[in-house]
Image (cartoon, rainbow, N blue to C red; front, side, top):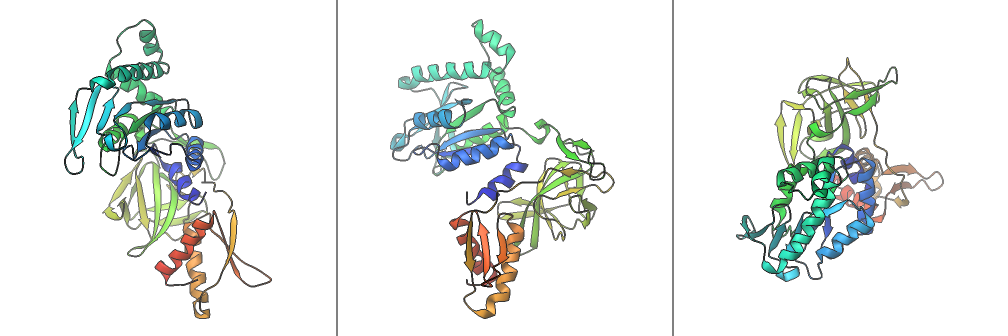
Length: 387
């Protein structure tokens, strides 16, 4: 539960997700929690069984644990060639080809024939795959029942529709550390997960009339976006991460925060690439970016066109489950600690602050011991406050 907030706000704005499983452990309790969160937001997903070269790894076991504990809609699109130390590549059940990965970091993808000892198993698994995909498409069901050949193109098109509709969940495998199988998963992201244009319209309410209105992933519609994260950057200050659902946002323009009615000027728009950032002049429907220096916007707020306002559904976070008292190591740091905690609470909606009336102690509440340990560590690293 410690990182529920990060998962919750990410899934709220994602169009699709790759769910990663340990090749030995399979589905773990936290996997089930995250899966339920993805179900809540109806996020299409594909699975990647990682660390298949690890001692004790077992693809069949992980696949069965996904079927039994998460979804009966999972279907294998690959099977490993060897496991643990013998892992050398994957069988693509869609194309019925084998892929190995050469080079120092597995960067050279080599297509070949399926090893003879795996051919019968691959054929049986492919038959299951075709049957599962066909069940979601009437025209393919008819072909399948009539024993007609179904082309790879037809299968891929039906699978894409099934994934976007959350009726199918393809499963892939490999080892990220050695960069084996990762390339094919990235291809699958393009082939099967939705683009912003594939996603249905988002619904919201008119702040004045409270009537339901819709926005589509169209650059020409009025601007609407959801702020899903606030973070402090040591170089540029406060960053507000947001997802654009409709319209276009340009640097230098004005928008309104329809959650609180405040007007905001758009200064710098940044496109984030992990820890790198690129300044851009505008961002369009479907884009995710970060804004520098917004004064009145926090996690879950809606930003929109002033003349065509909409309020999107907020992000609901669970209540904290643990409290601890926190004190600075020196009295001189008391004020600095208060400033640091207020800034951190502004970034993290599951971090709550209060002062105990009897003892006068500062009490912080969060999602678990690890969550609060990280808060204490961040106070030291980012604000120079030891507590």
